[in-house]
Image (cartoon, rainbow, N blue to C red):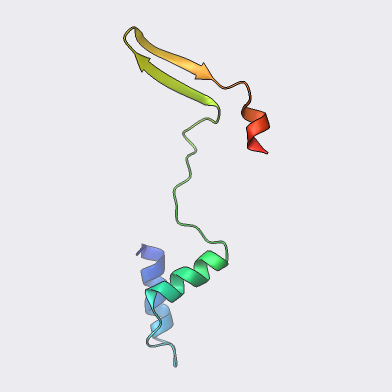
Length: 70
């Protein structure tokens, strides 16, 4: 459970009628609302990778990157 979910659960449980709101209910509602708590991979450039080999590192670029994004 994330910090956001814990804080939301505590706040909701203080409200009348919501004393027993579950973690799963919070997760389901947040997911349905489009909230995500996954990390974004901003450090990873799409279509470019660094390969390690016997002779050092080399950069490999996928020429079809733009076509695969759609």
